[in-house]
Image (cartoon, rainbow, N blue to C red; front, side, top):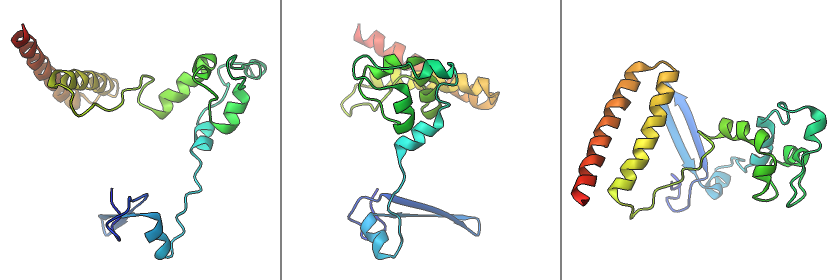
Length: 171
């Protein structure tokens, strides 16, 4: 998103204010925010937020948490709790039992979905959309929002029909 003031730089500061029941959004780059006299320099530390989200070690007794160490890089779980950063890719396995609930809380799930490349075929996009809709349907049923669940169910049926037609054409 581009800065509302200069129209050139990437906006990194996003302000939303509600005035007289009207939502007003302002998007600024850091230099324009500084020129306007606002001190919006981010002192926000994502790692500290991540570290504070988990009840680190609540599932295990405190003495066992202090024993958790990644065999590959030597990072302790206590150190991860202080910094919010893992040392290597092997830490995910070493601290798996404690990380999964934390990751579920921060993200929609524990499996990375990512973005779909621009040149991806329609069938692949539809299959990905189908998976997403199935997840949304499950959540709608769990939260008992049945009207939404019915709309999602109908969309799932449409996509399945399109995918069947697409697979028949390829044969």
